[in-house]
Image (tube, rainbow, N blue to C red; front, side):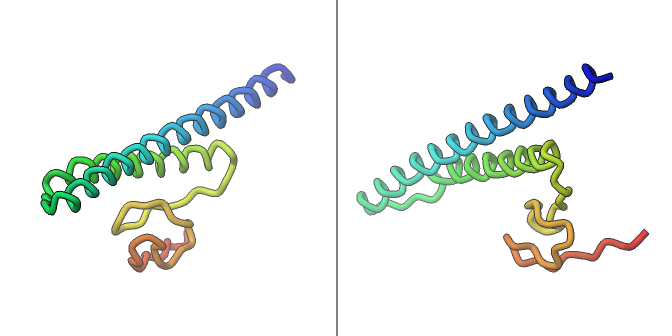
Length: 115
């Protein structure tokens, strides 16, 4: 029985470790995306040609990485035994389960119905 419990604890630590590494990697990708985007914006301003289509792909890639970061953070919170959060009904970002307003978009959240 003790060996099974120790195995579960090790599995939990391994999952937390794996999620933290994944999170660090995603944040690095996001930072690299910001660097690439910043260089392009600078060049466009320098050359006095601001073409928004040129930036659309980079912005979308960064937004996609941000979404993945939020999902990994939520999984990490669960592995660490934190209370579950909910997703905003408007923007989809994770917020405190008792929040009345989304801290990202300001949307009013519906109250959960008592059971």
